[in-house]
Amino acid sequence: MRFIGTTPIPETIAEMESLKEPFVTPEQIAVILGSSAESISTQAKNNPSMLGFAVVIIKTRVKIPRMAFIHFMKYGYSGQSSELLY
Image (tube, rainbow, N blue to C red; front, side, top):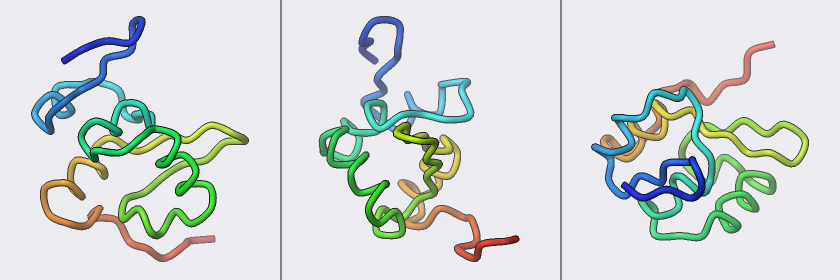
């Protein structure tokens, strides 16, 4: 695992599983997806359902629930309902 400043950047799912934070950033998943953090952020803001895993957007910040992302990478879906509950 490498670091950008103090932020760990996992390169494998096993390294992602070893993290303790409940949320990760686009920078932290970009290497695993083989994409850029900017592309992930843009997709999350414009059409999050196309990513296949849950995202949380707060103003301009994009956060990804770590366990949902891991589940998506292992099993092909996030393990969460796609229905919105109000």
